[in-house]
Amino acid sequence: MQSCDLRYMRGPTLLLSVLVAAGPAWAQLSPTVDEDADEFLPEELHPVEEHARDLHWGRMFVEAGVLFGILESVYWFDKDANSFDFKYNIDARNLRERFVTFRAWSLDDNYFNTNGWRHTAQGGLNYLFARSNGFSSVQSYMVSLGLSAAWEFFGEFKEEVSFNDIVMTPRSGAVVGESVWQLGVFFLRGKPNWFNTIVGNALTGGRGIFDYVDGKRTFHSDNSSSLGFDADITHRFELSLVGGTQYESGQPSQSIARIGLETELIMIPGFERPGRGRELRTAPSFTQIRVEATRNEREMIDFRAFARAAVTMWHRKDITRDGDGWNLLYGLSSAYEYGFHASTMRRLARTRDRVAIAHLLGPTLDLTVHARGLRIRTIVDVYANFGLLRPFAMDAHREQFPDDEVRSTVVRDNYYHAIGVTGSARIQAGYGPVAAGFSHQRDHFKSVQGIDRHQEDLVQDYSLYDKRNESRLWARYGFDLNRDLALEIELAAELRDRSGRVKETKQDEHEQRYVAGLQLVF
Image (cartoon, rainbow, N blue to C red; front, top):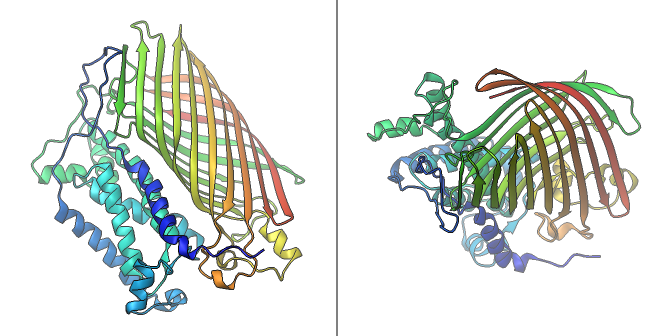
């Protein structure tokens, strides 16, 4: 059936999408809190917001302008490749269809990596330019959004305006930018040694340097760990090396090896100290970054980069001086995921599974219970999604029905724009050196219809559907190397189910991994 023409709905759809994407930006980092306030009265509310800093508009625009100029130079230097998308001239029709009728708006068909991570990196850099010059997370998001829009409206004035870039570039860029920013601030808060200074300035876009130039004192915690980190901030860094065996449906087993790095920060000083209280944190109160790569005997078969940041959170706790009690965060968060996965039957770059997902906004619950040395933590996230992914059943469908028309992104780089929902749950328990846990994530995706860049050429604008399920069961035993450093031995079982549907064509794969590894935790 011919899909209805949604071009005249682009104005309302654009407004709704930008508002949804902007929602996660209403949060601000709080680097300074009363660290002596161990006890709060439960009936009192303590809203925590960011303390104002001087805004350096000129310096921010110089940095952003330099990046804009570099990208524009590269764009026109490679004019022959980019002219593939040229459609407009500088005239009244261009302005009218860009800003009035919205007929120039569409889902572009750039290559997957361009839309999937390069634009996210651009949005993240614009976000950090603002952050390092004193802007709050709200203001930094608006700067990233404005610069992304300026690029679409004027930097690529000969092309259609990319609907997906307006939504995804600033939103995913803000998530990555805020996660990296908070990590940098954490290092700058530690002892002023060379490592914290170099890494902290690199991750914050030079905030420590700018503070020095502006005559401001960079805050350093008086309570540092043996590694020089801020001991008042709850943190976990995990460097892992894992090896094991993978079983794919219908294929022989293969040996695999994985290296990974994960960081987690809860930017609430004294978060785990005894006390009772509740706070409304309008600042991002936690961030998480995870990067991991897996190889078999021949090649890299899996890569994943993930960033997650709070939006706004309620914090409630009731912890006795003996350490028993509970700690609760609940509110809204946002995340971004990029990765690829190659199986035995999908080894080529064009056929392996790929995702680049902006988890725009959703509820989060993070509850930790302490009881007589036992620690149980439960984390639940649900997100509304917008992103790009490989249609898992498309290759099989095109082989069976080579004359079926497909959207332009499938023709050019075998992916589609999707909306969807993600739900994940994690529970882990620890007692002394022993710990165990289970995690599960489920994703559902459906193609966005009606606004393909070459919509007028699609006689059949049929929907695409994809699902992904991933589970992990693990157990660990830890050895303390010193007060702030531990080595953990892990055994784990991992399951992955991936499926897709194109019309009546269905495809699915099932994988199992059994691994053992070491984690250096600090």
